[in-house]
Amino acid sequence: MSHINWETGTYGADKIEIFQWGEGAKCYIGKYCSVADHVKVFLGGDHHVNWVSTFPHRQQNGTKGDIRIGNDVWLSHGVTIMSGVTIGDGAIIAANSHVVKNVEPYTIVGGNPAKYIKHRFSGEVIDLLLKLEWWNLSGNDINDMHDFLCAEPDLNKLKELVEKFKKSPI
Image (cartoon, rainbow, N blue to C red; front, side, top):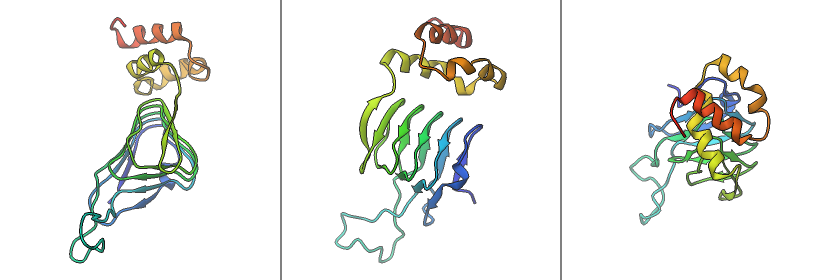
C-alpha cells in the first residue's frame, strides 16, 4: 500500500523517505512540485507527551493526520515534514527545514522549526495566482504560458490570464 500520492508534473516524490507505523495517514502532493533529495515525511510516530510515560506500552504511536502539499511547491534538500501539516500552493521550504505547522500559499519558510521568512509576491499577485490555478490548465495552455511562468509576475498579464481562463471578472 502506497502512503504517498503525487500528481502530474511533480518530480522527486518517488525519492521521499516515508516514516509510518501503521497509523493510516497519507501524503498527498499536488501538480508541478519540485522535490529535492533527502526529503522525509513523518506520517505517524507521535508519542503521547501528556502521558506519564512517552513509551507506547500498549498502543501504537499516534498521528496528527495526512500531509497535504499543494501545487507548484518546492521542497528543498533535507526537508522534514511532520504529520497533519498542509503546505499551500506555490510555497517554498528552505533546505534542512523541519515543518511542524501549516505553510500559507506562496510563502517561504525555513529553519527548525520552520518559520515564516517572506511572501514570494504581493498579496494581489498571490490572490490572482490562486485564482488562475495554472497547474489545472491543459498541457498546451501551460506550454503557451511558458514565457509568463518563467519570469517575474507581470500583474497586467496575470489579470488577462485570469480573465481568459477563469471566465469571471476579477
